[in-house]
Length: 358
Image 1 (cartoon, rainbow, N blue to C red):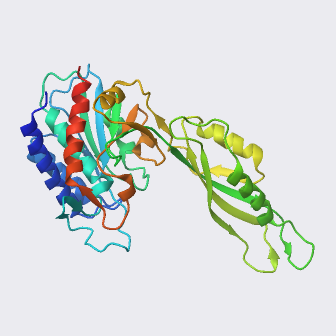
Image 2 (tube, rainbow, N blue to C red):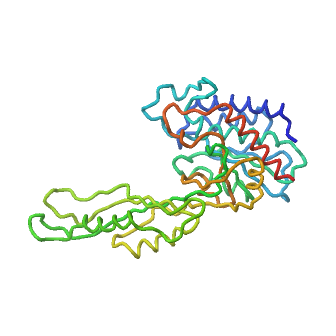
Image 3 (cartoon, one colour):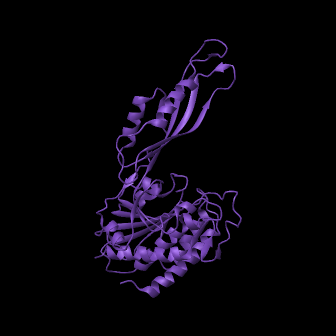
């Protein structure tokens, strides 16, 4: 059974660390300051850690290569504050049980709560599995120097708990992302005469297809695939028929299709040239029968499918997304997290990990 007094101390120290992290700007690719603060915090509590770039990770004291390993991961980078802030985004302010500050909800509360759970189990010698903790960079911009850059250093993982604000409910599936660059080709000509082939008209036909097409297979966890045209550009002069029309499509992937299958379907239906910028952000799924899902259900948690992407998209291991905070507060002005959410988050993380020991 967990030690409530020890957990209470860990929670207070987690809140203190979060206040410190809020006070240090840590935009994606600029996380050096928060990486240093996290490293110092671990050192101050006699935990050896590794650093690569702005990524910090550590293993439990009695790590045994013969045992399976669970990774606790969240990110310490943030987006830039939007103009709507009425508070100082870098001043951690507690008011009415809420901690305000940039990154408090996404995903600072998750990060410090996972670290508290890691510290709770850190020096216990009888664990049936290993625990690793990773505070990683460049999640907000899906950068290449985040968790993806340290997967080989971390070693293989049997399970990953990704900390993102989910109100401590379990996201057992998550949509992936594929961005498409499309070009419709025509022939240039004078707009006043019947000359040329208008690339815009060709693009419009394809855009209409993207708007209306329904993929046959629907995920029982995250619903249907979703395609949205988000950018379009063509033409330079009012009297010249454009020979090219460029447009961008945002494709939200589900567990029912691979990126390659989706590309094949699209290319069969449109006349535009279609190129994928990247196929690295993949959808994820964990079976409802998995031990961690069952542990969460036993604690009264619920499951759902997440429409948003996270570092799960680049993690090649079985993973689940769960954390304190509310996704609807992410990237908003005057971002905050309830202190009670952090308290509950630490307790639930510890409870889930304990149930997986039975």
